Length: 254
Image (tube, rainbow, N blue to C red; front, side):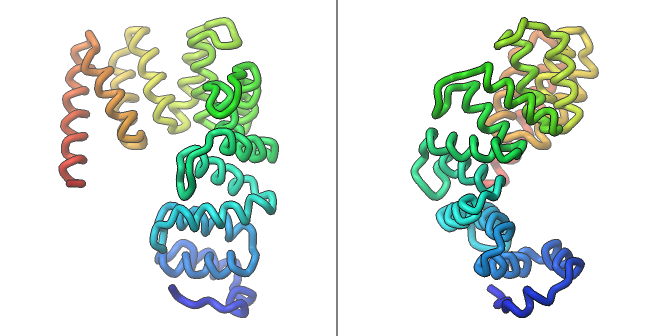
């Protein structure tokens, strides 16, 4: 890794640093690492993400965890949230849902939309904490007010399923629409489902075709199974297209 001196860090301009960070990943990682080692909390959080993603450096979840912890202990909200994700998913440490919830709660209380979403999800599903859907809905609403599209989608689920509110598919439809338009793949799928229930098959197909572009492989597989079981001919045809794309992806990784 390129050696970046403290003098270089101190003298670099904002525009020069922006150019470095948007340039070759290895060079960006070297500068962020230098800033992290010199105690810059934002850099510590970013370097943790670089290590987790393997951006410009070798992927190392354990070291990423260390840097997230450094920044979280200095009250960096996103680092708190990412530390929670490490504990939830077992990245660099044994998974521990209650500890994940602890960090999500701190991130939420610090005003981070992702922290609110993750804390609310844990409350809604009883993952690492006693299920409390009323409190979960409050946090989802706070995140949604900040424009967090995954939270907007989850609120739609509350209205569709009648959790803590009277079931109302019209309100759910509106929340799913907002989430879909905001780019959330679950929102796109849910919006398409309700469009189909209204008989708007062509509109539903348009949204369903967008889902694989951003969805996880597991979610795409779930959607493909749903499409394949549909009584709608156009949906079953799309299921075949999705399955073929999934097979191509698997072959390219083999």
